[in-house]
Length: 386
Image (cartoon, rainbow, N blue to C red):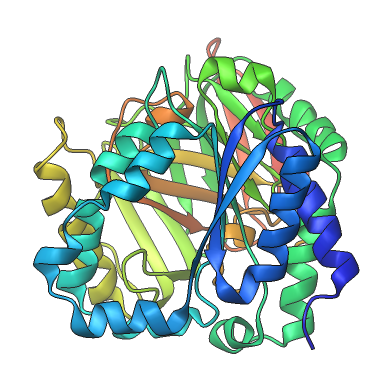
């Protein structure tokens, strides 16, 4: 069983509507061969809007062969033809590239690091603060992915396709209600009964609503990207202050895609403390990825902010009920918050990095905004918005 033709067309319409394309826009549409029907529908929908579209396709077989056979020295070379397409386009739409994400667990880490280095010039173009491109990243369900996440295929399709189907207007209303309670917040305090207890400073920082639509206003202020499924409010906290612990039941390594479980993530003065951060599974992988990305960042960025806090997000997509280790929809679960480390310049922060890694809390957190006048506003109690 695969996604029905009807749902594919509906998702293509949602993706292109989210992109807010203008007549004459040039769009690069890329994804895995397993998403070909969706890529075709997205390209057609772009053309119907008066935009132009070019499709780039990859396969699991190609990805596996590249990491098996090609030396790191070649993988560290920026593909100039792809860089040229991104420079020339107005919009980059990316759909999940791997049919089976578990194959990435066997990719050699030195080659993954080399590929990260090759992408640095691409990030410069895509996320440039003044002339950056619009971008959209969409999830997609497959049977292999469902096995990798340990869920039934029907549940994964409902999470991803159901999450994408939620109307931007509904998510915008939810986001605006939440935003109004954070209007004068200086600090945000988050806690639960599973080990989460943290404070981050947000005074003066822009609050962004991920409603699944890149509006003209979003574009003007530099918030040019969107994820589908959507459904969160996110902030770039002050990167060098704030401390505490976040309990994250499950995440995926940003380098190798290995499952990491029961993370107690500790940070101080905005910086993750790797020697104090623990996990019941693959904690060594987590630490290695931060260190390897930091090595890449040292070749490009100053100050180096790989391990600094980059985002506090609050999820509210009503169709996504639980986290499964698929970060894209996990961070939209109502009753959760997520912290990210690494880059955040594209949405109001000051950090540049090859890394942006989200860690999603368990459902049931409490959230309190501490205002400039020392009063507090209750945002959420035990996973329920107030």
